[in-house]
Structures are given as C-alpha cells and as structure tokens.
Amino acid sequence: HTPNPKPETRKQFMIVALIFVNFGANIAEAQISYTATAEQIQSFKTLDYVFTGLFCVELLVNMAANWWWPFWAESWNLLDTLIVFISLLSIPLEDIPGVKIVRVLRAFRIVRVFKRLKALRLIVRATVLSIVPVANTFIVLLLATAVFAILGKEMFSEHSPRFFGNFSISFFTMFQCVTGDGWASEVARPMFIEQSNLQNHIDENTYEAAIVEFNGGVAAFFIVFVMTITMVIVNIVLAVLLDEFLKAAEMEKMEQCLEQKENSAHISNRPTSPLEGLLRMLAGYSAEELSQRLQALFRFLDCDRSGSIDYYELSEGLSSLSLSPSVHVSLEDFQDLTQNLSLCNEQQKLTFSLFDTLVRSQLRTFVQKVVQDAIEAGGASG
Image (cartoon, rainbow, N blue to C red; front, top):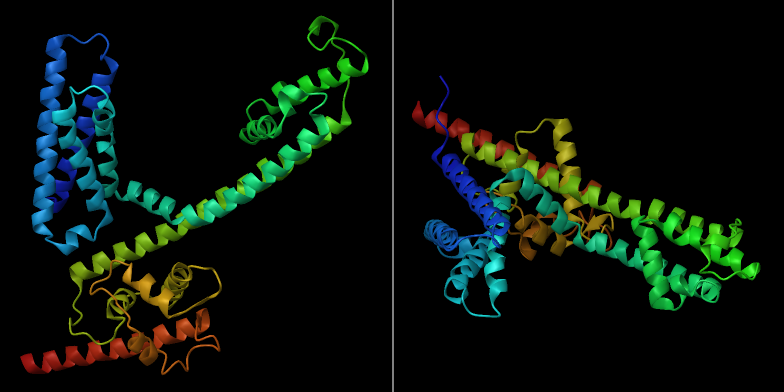
C-alpha cells in the first residue's frame, strides 16, 4: 500500500504544472504571432486571463495562510507578488501603444517555478550567494583585460589599427579573446599577414599577395593573454561559483534535515537555549556528521572569510536560517554563551575551535535537558 501524497505536495505539483502549461501557451503564442488569425489571438487572450486569475487566487490564498509578516518576510513571495502584479497590469494596458513591454514581462511567470522545485531553488540560492565573491573576481578579470588592452594598443596600434586602434577597440579585441570566439583565426593570424605585408611593402588588402610569416611578438602576446586570463582567472571564477554552490547545497541539506526532524521530533518545545532551533537540528547527528555540519555552518557564518566570526556574523547568519524555533541571538545572549566573552579570542571573535567548543557545550546541556524532560514525562504518566 502506497500512502497518498500529502495535500501540500499535491498543491505544489498542480501549481508547477499550471506554470508550465502557461509557459507553453506563451511559447505557442510567440510562435504563431505573425500568422495568427483573430480567433486565435482572442483565444490566447482568454487563456491568459484565465491563468492570471488562477495565479491571483493562488497568491491571495498563500497571503491569507501566512498573514501578515510571515508572507512578506519570504523573498519568494515578493517575487510572486511582483509577477502577478505585472500580469494584472498588462490587462488594461495591452492595447496602449508603447507599453507592449509590460505584456512581454508575463513570460517571467516561469520564474515562479524556482520557488517550488528544490533543485532549481538551490541553483538560484547558490547564484545569489556567489554574487559578491564572483563580482570581485570579475573585477580582477576586467582589470587584467584592460591592462592587456593598453599593452596591445601601445604595441600594435600602428600596424593593426582595426584590432588595436584605440583603447575601446583594443579592449573589445581582448574581450573576444576571453570568450574564445576565433581569437586565433580572426585576430592573431590576420595580424601575422598584416605584419608580414607591412614588412614586405605589400598592400594589406591584397590577400592574393599576402605573405604569412610567423611573428613571435604577436604570438607571445596572445599566448600569454590566453594562458593568464582564459585558463587561470576564468577558472577561478568557476571555482568560486562552485564553492558557493556546494555551500548552498550543504545549507539546503541542513534545512531539509531540520524539516524532516520537525515532522517526527519528540523533543520538548520548551526553550532551553538561545540556540535551541540550531540544537534541535544538530541533536540527531552522529559525531562524524556533527563535525561536518559544524564546519559547514562555520563557513556559512564566516562572511568575510577571516577564519573567525563576531557577534554580528553569528546573529545575522543564524537568524537567516530556516530554523524552528528561529534563532535570534542578542548581545546579552552572546555574552552568556561565551561566558562573558571568555570563549572568544582577543578580538572578541570565535575561531572554529572556539565555536565548536561553544556549540558542543550547548548541545550537551540541551540533550541532558531533553532526557530529563523525557524522564519526568514518563514518571508523570506512570
């Protein structure tokens, strides 16, 4: 006997299916837009009104079920609201010239599926977390490309003005090399011909008389650039993105474990520590798993990658997690947890070893309290 799917699961499946059907209708409308008859255009409009109404009802139900702050505190709900609002706005404005873009934005309804599919939500979360570190790496990439653009302009502007005539042209040439789009066949090798023709006094536009000779300066310039930029810095960007993705996957897994534990938890609901929501999640792990979770959690809290966390990183990081009960560490709580900062280093921060000691101490106290409550509950029932 297979149990029936949970009502919430069925609801999410229906919404996801509805979003994909709506997206398919948008594709079909875009495909036949130039050849559609009046009846077909009206059918697509009616279908769009139906989808807009259904999405509006779903949003209102969600808003009523999570009224007021719990709804607006969820960033995915803000995205849902924006997309539904755009859909409603496009209805009265669809026939007004100049506002066609509002109707086009309805295609972004498919973005709502990210909220309901964990795999897609994980990718979005990892992308958001990687914005700052990847942006820093991109700055390095742009600066390095600009340096080579200046070098190329100074070295080749006289002989190859179509590739290095000024900084803008030179920078675009270097950007083409970064993308790998024909940098050798369309940039470097034509420069061999230009340099050879110039040395042999041949018109550079007379390709029948082109003499191709190897030019070590041109070759060395492009080889160094490709090795430095496309094979090193670009891979650093990918490595940073992968690191943030793995970290996001770890946090998503922790949250899933927490959700599973909440469904079958028998731990007392009485608060025992400012970190109770975190301790509830960690209580069921083995010693090896606990060490891995603590390391992943510390990496998540260490926003500046300094190897230590202060009160603000601990408080903001824990409050951003979906824990039950949610964890909000005040400054007084931080002082109590660290035994009046005696567990902190000289900068009043927690290194991983100090953080590990603090959490394990709180976890032991929490487990002892849970066992005591269980014993008391058993004695009372007996």
